[in-house]
Image 1 (tube, one colour):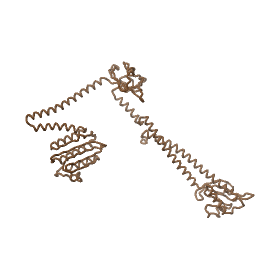
Image 2 (cartoon, rainbow, N blue to C red):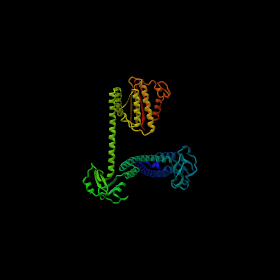
Image 3 (cartoon, rainbow, N blue to C red):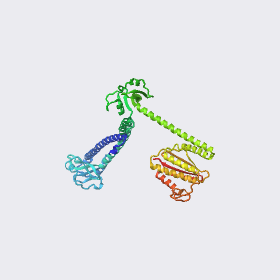
Image 4 (tube, rainbow, N blue to C red):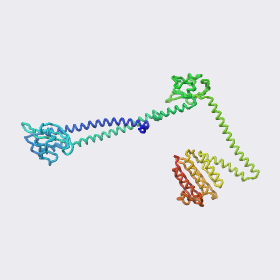
Amino acid sequence: MKRLLDVSLETKIHGILIGVISLIIISLSVFYLYHSSNEYYNNAKRLTLQSAKTISFLPSLVEGENLNNNEQIQVLTNQYIFENDIDFVIIKNKEGIILSHPDPSMIGKKEPYDEDTRANIFGAYYTVVTDKYIERSIMAMAPIYTGDEVKQLNGVVKVGYFESHIVEKIMNKLYQLLYIIIFFIVITFFVSKWFGKYIKSETLGYEPKEITMLLKNRENIFSALDEGIIAADLSGNVIYLNNAARKYLKLPADPNNENIYDFFDTNIEEWVKNNDNRSTLKYFETYLNNKEVIIIINNLYEKEELSGHVIILRDMTEMAELSNKLTIVESLFDDLRAQSHEYKNRLHLISGLLEMEKYTSIREVLDEEVCNLDQYEKNLNGIEEDRIKALLIAKMNKANEKQVNFAVDEDSWMENVSSKFNISALITIISNLIDNAIDEVTNQKHSEINFYIGCFDGWMEIIVQDNGNGVTNKDKLFDKGYSTKDRGINRGYGLYNVAANVKLLKGHIDVQSQKGNTVFTVEIPLS
């Protein structure tokens, strides 16, 4: 039940409006259907009783002393059934001999009087519900009086109306009501949806729980601030103030009818009114309870109209401490920058000294090393994950030792990875792909390896390209123990580990290879 109630405000409005209106519509429909059903039954009773009376008084039926002409009576009743909305007519004489019946084989047979006894003996007119003939029916009884001068009770007319016809009419009415109910429910749905959006727009799109949470969070956040925050209307009456503001102003927990302008020595009210500018904040220093504070004032607007002010109180002592800390940080930054510059100067100095000793080749190596440091810094600038950056630097040094030109695409970038499992798997994938590429191009005359890592559309893409001899058997490339090199103790596990970790991260790997150009592409979902 609690889970059912834990829905959005718009859904609750939908449910309440649709439920209430549906209940009203269904209740009215059931009430209408009930009365319609009673009316159908009453109409059927009136129709059969009136038909029975009409037939019992037909001149061709009551003339003479006896009911004898069966054929004429049958034709007469068939004609009446055809012309009127009834289902069958049964006529019996005084002795119970059937003179007219929907089943011709029953004509002439004797039927004992049962439910029609009152009509035969007492001459009563009435209706009953019976399933004696064909199917369940509403049947009316009427006595037949014959004779010219003296009327004598000489038979009974029974007129029947099938109950199934009434049920059919009720079902047709029910279908109509269902269409009407569905129509009104659909209308109610759109009305409730509009009403829900209207209510949500009035609450700025927030749910009631979210509004409660926002208010609680606002109070917690403002109470945790060291700065005093005061909200006041145009007259200066306090609307809200946090705990720090109460301490600044020395107010009780629940101030009543306090005016902010009463707490400042300077004429802040006149200053605010004379500087009503939307584009700038108001800053000025003053003394509050023998303490030097800075006051920041900003305007509050409601529907583009000025409605009040927000006043922030900040202790100047804290500002001075922050200023000192900032100065220290700037000083440290300058020292680090100077140290970095000095480090390069020393490298150049060493290069010059070595040149004097005629170690030209060493100077060239040092110059190249300086350039490499700059290149590393440039290409790895977009990779924020320190562990991946450290791995790439290590692989660059390894490639450099083997005289392999290892380049990281300058468009590479990567954010920090929080999951230890993910970073471990990524390190395994990248390390093995690069090691495999280095092994492939070591014997090449002009060996090159290009590396790229980036993220897009929720995926991380890793590309390692080399100009080795290519892959000869892609089907077995990631099999455990498979290797194109000389077999050894640890051969055939690098690409197998790559494939295993890619599968573990629910990614996929693609290999495009031909002699002189092999590209491994790994794509891993960031989620």
